[in-house]
Image (cartoon, rainbow, N blue to C red; front, side):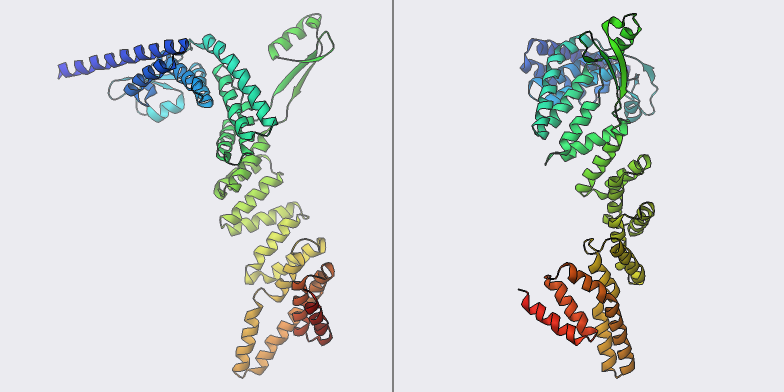
Length: 460
């Protein structure tokens, strides 16, 4: 048994040694521009550890990310390559949790999340790592960074949003690899993707990640006038240094400015995108979360309301409409929607009529307001009244049948003024003319019936 354990230990050391050799060879190949050899060597190393990168000690993991990043960049997979290079910066920022797994392999988990996911139950200690390839990385990245940013900006201005989205993402990860986590570029990427036809899913992923990261986009801009009298933007260190010097180092009028938060726009855009993709449950949740921070945002309120409707949450939808109307009594769209919801429930006929009447008083030209009021008074299912009348008459219950007819006639008489308003607004609308003809017949106004019968025939 002891001999077997010794054999496994020897094997483990041999594998680690092989990985170090292959990754080191891959680094040399990348630096010399030999992409084929770099890919070959890194593939050999990957065949040993697979997706278990936590088996690589931080220095080896850094080299692995370096090779993967540049091989992908040089093969045209720019954003993916930039993401790998950005992982190097994380190595220097995150805690490294080290220990041994159940098979006695040394493990290195980068960050608390990875430690909790893969190292649960293991005895781990915290450590730190300082990347060794930082300067080398920055020198290689700078020209790529400038080019990616230029292409991204130019493409966005030319409305080539697919290209802009990809290049802004690449810019973000390259900046991150260089040690600067400027999420504004990730935000630009999300906004660009949101305007594409086929890549809105990428926008959703990016915007969601920004919200979860707590990104606001708020920045402090430092400016001063130089010797030529021109306004110049400075970094904070230079701004503070120049401001402290007796002559301002030639600068005057030192000013700071805080940019507005982009957080409200993030919630608004993400909720709208999700709703447009028919992801109503998710859209409603984002809208709800956004409204807690920005309670007066009308777009988020509308998405939340519509999401309730689309997911069949009728009570929530009606309550949401009532809350919106209470907050803004002039919200005609919400009043209309509330009337529609009431009209779907026969027991709420009176509420439907009152709601539509309120809307008509506010704006008789609001689309379908008068029409819906007319039919809420007549009754959405007038055919049932006619059938009831016929059945009672057939059964010989003449008084009861006449009562049904009188009640129906009274409803038509009450709705008639609003139908006439519809006609005044659109006298050549054949449907309105036909409706009035039928209403005049029901209310026994023969002269008007004949008049509108002639109008109906005259309209082609």
